[in-house]
Length: 375
Image (cartoon, rainbow, N blue to C red; front, side):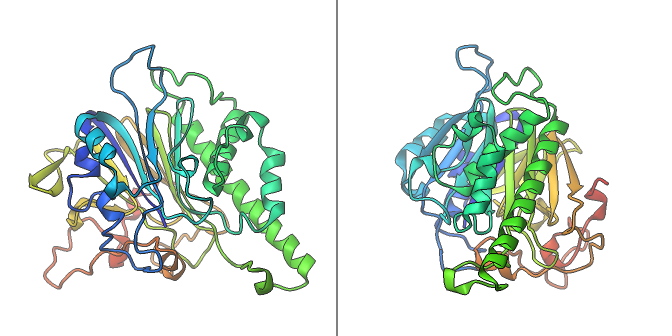
């Protein structure tokens, strides 16, 4: 499936330092994913998108992001390479696509934009295009202003429309200016939680209705797996705060992989080799990625499954999503089988016996850092 990457820094960074120059940049991952398990779709060649906010305040530019999408493979797009070498931004979204829903077209490439808001998704809403009742629930619930903004055919863009509607119903106008400090990050997080809850509930209702109608628990004959979970790794920003989720509608399976890294500077210590430099305790740079951009294990921390992350004023906070799929015991292992079957897991190499045990723990190594979770 897809991969996405987020950069948020106090200072603008040249896009090439994220997209093209690192040996394991997100663009290089799209054709050389060294950590990919699933080989049914060994490359992310169904298009890409890069969205970024300009650093200067200019009324003519507005407060929305600039987005560049194309259906050509990211590694073979000369315009992307040229753009990356001449563009700087302090907030960047990047996405490479291996499609599971929607045809190959620019309107189906992430990130999606609505005024100042930008959104992307890694995963799938289970059976979204196979259960008409599910899509009907979206259409009946979401306001026409946000339904009308859907240009493509992906479940991801419908999820974005639902997020916009949830934000609207919390009293925030998504089409209005974000202002100097953006929309309240707590409201963005609440709207994201509502979006996930509605998708989860509507999918269950549609599946149950289909099971009753077909009078069987599994309908293999019509190509619908009623037990398939939804993978909802969402990311949204208003140009100031960022909200990211790692979520799956399952108590036993892992969500699609997601990692974050913080430090003073993301820098090259030799050509094509990058690391997260830490000169002090400041979080001047925050990176979030489906697959780590470096092979330095100490650079990255795995975000626990079914967690929502907020980045505001360079502060990273992790909140568990408390619902029927939440497990209060972090020691309980989840299976990576389903996410791996969709190409959505990026395993970290097991440490050798001499490895420094003080390195930041990664879920893949069987260790957790519960203190990162905010109750």
